[in-house]
Image (cartoon, rainbow, N blue to C red; front, top):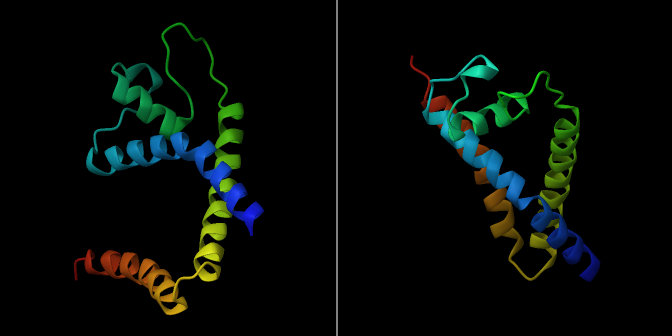
Length: 124
């Protein structure tokens, strides 16, 4: 159990900055529909961060070409690690002294509420 917690801790801490970046830029995009389509249009810092989020490149006037392969690989590793970390967190929630019904309730609400909100957001 100690090794599971340690692994969960290290994965969480390692990827937390990148996850926060993606959450922050995704949140910004949700409420800002003004998106640039070309790399040269990203002039301010927020637009450049948005380009990292969407295109996996950091626009620069001095760059001739872009290759997002390395950054995409990092994002894939981050995504896999997030899935592992979430699974470990759920495992720990069931095994470390919490009432199982509360864990099940949280998981169920975590699935049902987003579905309900999407359904309520549809105009009929």
